[in-house]
Length: 436
Image 1 (tube, one colour):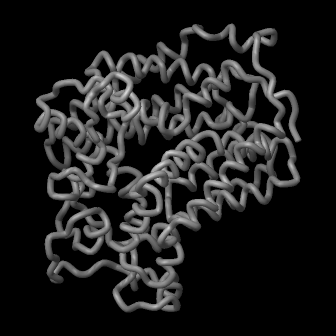
Image 2 (image 1 turned 90 degrees about the vertical axis):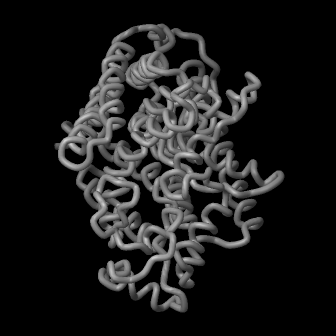
């Protein structure tokens, strides 16, 4: 079993895993929804472009463009492991301390005190996204550090048997729960599974325990994020966690006044809405997790095409969806993720704080058309080859996060906002000389 898991998490299979996930999520599911649920032509467009992307990923993965960079004698900058990891985690501690000191409220504490879903939504947005002035930098630093750099350093710390590795693990987990941000759990869970499968942390039989523990935390996180009824105190909120029926949403007979925003929809009855629809309102935390995992990526990816055609006439943005690209080339910034989010759940206007999911194929298409889908996919395939050829296990260990990032986010955003360009520079030009 251990050998099988070790093979499954090896980056040599990374392209196959990504292609398989794209085929399931963005080819099979859209065609199935089109056939059996509702005939949305944008679902078929998404499926066709995704198939083109899969071919390009395979070609990119098989092309040996940068293989020379991974030869033993290749020139690299030597970096001490202690210095590198101290810089990463020291920066994170400073970021966390500054964020907590300057925050008006902490989402987890508010949830335990009985805040409503809308109040928690506003507080999560204010915690990072809606900062003003110099505090706007906190949002960018958070995404920059926690997306790929910290998970990669986390693997390095665990492999090096640092005496601080347990502290680092629980610090990362506590941070995930503190801001009730579900996506952060995967940035802890995925590297942990990789470490266990490789035999560098705990043992192979602990994988079910770790996975179960993380999903319990994810469930509690989702549960708390749903908010409470007005007037509920902390004790009621905690006791309700163990009562699966106490937090069901109102029955269909309850009147709902113009629900806007994702959290407000949670207060609306789902009625006859399709599971693969933005107006579906899950009535339990478990259904909400499933809906967010399988339905929302498909629905949102198709909505990118819909909004792109209906509002912009399918004229390419040429990178204007990225703040960095638009600034570099003097383009007017188009906050397309906020616009799609607003179209889905905010009455058609650009959302001030919400951001929609973005599949990299949809992002590539709205910016550069079908040629952009091909070029982006070729690059992604080549990047997966770097994970396969690299000798740096800390870098190799985040390939699953990279795959997940491409399935649920755009390549441009991941490269510039989430620090992926630094990670790729590291893999091509940096050598870590020793562990702790």
